[in-house]
Length: 113
Image (cartoon, rainbow, N blue to C red):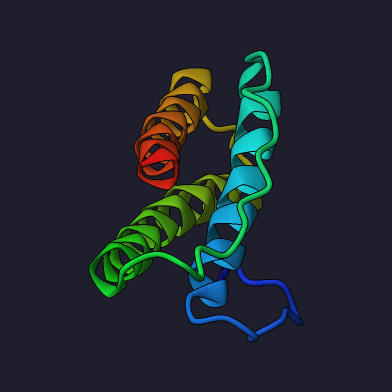
């Protein structure tokens, strides 16, 4: 099973898990972009939003969980194809990368508010 949390991370602020999850998804996007032959979207190192209001932190947590679940499903499908000896269709990998880019861009906007 794919997960996007590092083996160890600092739990010092509330939503460190969501931020660690987003950083893991960003790394997965880089892999998908590389496999799809896309130019890299660039690395963003998210920081914990300790000063955010509770409602915004809950939104971040919820959206990061949904994105992680979708990303894991897409990556697991690609891995299953490879394990079965088949190559993933390049458009499938490209679509996964573009979907991750779009969803992360929405979360980037949340961080910039």
